[in-house]
Image: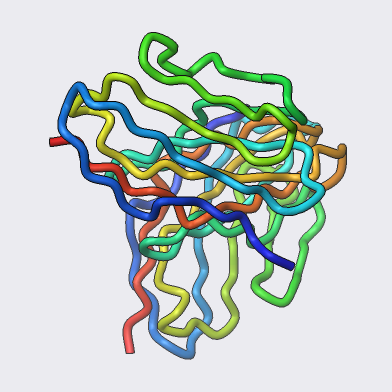
Length: 115
Length: 111
């Protein structure tokens, strides 16, 4: 079974530029998550989708971050404009969304450096 | 979700059992204990979870105290590939409930 795919693996931009990350979850997984992981800290949830609807975006900085999952499959996370403090690893995860173990499966992440 | 407390780091000898502690004194009756680990440059990986009974799978064993205020993850024969940050998370096991990661326990397996 293929895992969660993310691209690109690395991205370097200057502050005030825009950037986008892509995620393709495990086939059939209804729930998709985007996390931000700053160096030395655990991942922090940014946004959670159930199919193509937003379940939780309470920790998403909506003035600069946006995310979509238009067809309920793959997803894009965008930052516009980027700030220095956005330097982090952006992780995508997916789960079945069913009331069972609810195990989340993570991709390898995109490492963003904002200069 | 209840908060957890883990040591920031620990070393383990290769080939020996590694016992990773976690305190969760404010855990509620319907909250499970989940363990994930994150190897360098990879995303977190699910290991095991449990409610009150001890659990074992191909990766590890989870021992939960009778009062459920603490637990121990046991890696039976630690290898160098087990070097990772280990996260203990307490959460209600319902669909779409978030994972709240702390800083975790940096475990280094020493040859």
